[in-house]
Image (cartoon, rainbow over all chains, first blue to last red):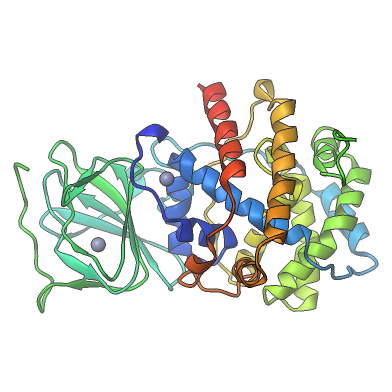
Length: 213
Length: 181
Ligand SMILES: [Zn+2]
Ligand SMILES: [Zn+2]
């Protein structure tokens, strides 16, 4: 699966993920893409190596005299962790946010067959799963901040570009777009934003289902 | 001369913890890394008492997760950095930290010794390369990693010499994926 991914995260996002400064919702999108993409995993792990180099050359702060002995008490008390079980149909980082698998998601309709499920994260950014029926369009919209849209199932088109499973579209203030689900299969995406979307017009325009691309 | 590392790379210590629950190895790692983790957490905004407690917990996590350490993909300092960073997000920001799916080596597919040596050498070379960066860029990178920059500001700090270590990690991942098939 990993070699088919053609749309990746930016270096700035990968580094911010490694440095630990992204909002939780963005961490979720990065961790999910990285679970599916070895190129970005290698990039994150090399940014982690930068963190390791900085930690190694940090000045020291003396620990309390009994710090080691209390740590030894803690390690004697606790068994080694068992590896977490691998979820069946979605990458592991998402499983914890939706209660196990895609079958457990509680979808809410948002019009024209599109459904969403908002995931519980810290409030600086929002993560939602989107369910777009085959051939349907998302409302035409612009962005006040950063938006990541990661495909989990199916595919969507945005202008000439096709985004399939594992691909991530990075949209910023400069972009206005109308992603349209591929005709072959319903599309499920993880969409993350750090500012509300700007819909064209005074009320969100409902896009027409778009068939026969 | 060439084969002797200038300083301990600590990999053998973590292996001794993983395979033999070796408390002496743990004590030596603790003496070296706990004060650095404490300094990292203090610079990231933790008060000294919280940083002290968290540094202890980071080292305890190392003990518990020793079976997940992959020396073909990370140095011990890198691995401890990731645990300390997650602790910072958990305690100082009170957030969950979604992590990528684990790709741990099964018992039959232990990484090749030569891969481990090369990765550890390249980690040391990366440290040296960072030390040689112009002062202003190094300062920017430190601020990013100590949590003093927002994610929007980080783009300015991303120009790092990651080429060889990135391809080394990619190679280790390829071999791991191949072994898992
Ligand atoms: Zn990628
Ligand atoms: Zn958008």
